[in-house]
Length: 96
Image (cartoon, rainbow, N blue to C red; front, top):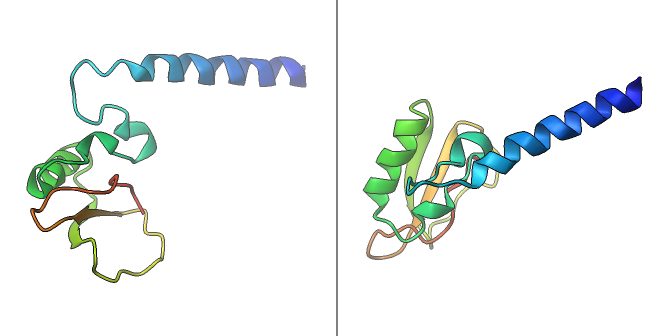
C-alpha cells in the first residue's frame, strides 16, 4: 500500500511539472511555483520590480547595486534585484 501511495505522489508531481515549461511568451510564468524569475535578467530594475510585485504583492522587493554589501540571512518575504550601473538586473531574482 505504501508503494502505491509513493507511486501516486511521483506521478502527480511529474504531471504538474510537465506543463510548467509552456511559457506562452509571458515573463516568469514558473515563478509562482519556485520563487525565481530568471527571465527578468537583463531587464530594467523598475520593470522587474513591478512584475514581481504583480505576482506576489506581499514581497519586499529591493533594488541593490551589485557591489553593495548585503546580509546573508534567508528571508522568505524578500527579493533582491542586483543591478548594474545602467539599472539592469544582472542576477536571477530569487526569494530569500
